[in-house]
Length: 135
Image (cartoon, rainbow, N blue to C red; front, side, top):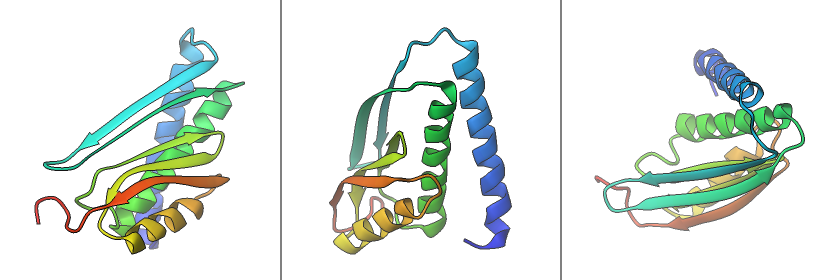
């Protein structure tokens, strides 16, 4: 990642963590968090649902930061351009769900996610498609 993109990415990540932490502290939320995410493009879609139990709001914020960093890494690299991908995290374990163009792209996306700060492991539910949507 070039320095040109590093500062804006960090600002976005800090804002995301602050918002998640504020919501977690302000709300009367129980210990279980359900993340239900769907992404759909013209012919392809990805859906992930995850139930996570957190001990503290800080644990939730850490996972939110990891999700932001992984999404940012995938976006800056361009490996997922034109493809639907969801990113979820539970206690540092990232789950990638969706469709990419090739097995090499799937492997590359896993490496990108694994190299993000705070990621303990990456679980892949990625499949492949021959061409990106719209091309």
